[in-house]
Amino acid sequence: MDTRAPGDINMTTNMPDDLLTGYHRFRANRYAREVERYHMLAEGQSPKTMIIGCADSRVDPSTIFSAGPGELFVVRNVAALVPPYGEATGYHGTSAALEFAITVLGISNLVVMGHSSCGGVAAALAARDAKPIGRYIGPWVALLNETRDALLAANPDASDEDLQNALERKAVECSINNLMTFPFVSEAIAEGRVRMDGALFSIIAGELIWRDPDSGEFSRVSKS
Ligand SMILES: [Zn+2]
Image (cartoon, rainbow, N blue to C red; front, side, top):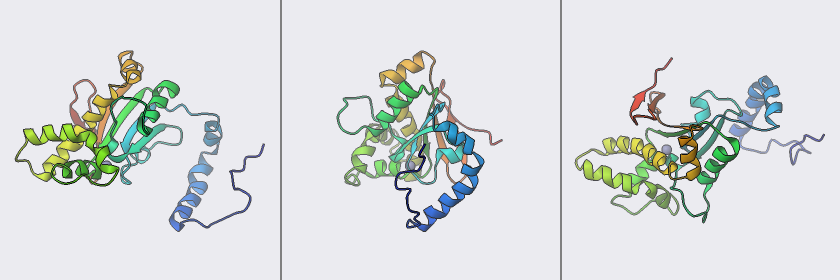
């Protein structure tokens, strides 16, 4: 069997230095250590958990949960948002990943993970009185408009920092509510096949705040 990757005829190092260094470290460490696992995973994946996270470089779910290859099915976008269920028009990357995870992979845990200092949430807040940011960012974070406006109406004197913190939490709620509008999600949860959680990651403290799926309350997770 020819196991060469496409283009694997000549050897090249013509790529960004930091990526090449990281790749060499991966080959020497993780791949060397887990080569059998990679061989097994080449046959297929069966992750138990899907994480919907933010694209932010500081909040990689595999790092936070010490997960290895094959363990987490992850989709990351700006602010860990989920659009509501709707017509299959346009390009629904997050919805497609969700559909695959639930209906094909049969994952049993679904987690929406937001985080502190989220630029996407800040963009949603900034758009309250300025022009939306960017050609694509503005319309995407507008998924939070209703949530943001309700928050502003209820807290007219809140500082920007407090609003940011509150909207980061409410954005997780918003994604969870939108997830429930997908029939294949709500059915899987009603039938007990899937558990849905929310979380927030504090970058400075390296801490997780977890949303109780029954009460909706957020609590700090024990660190050991
Ligand atoms: Zn973010």
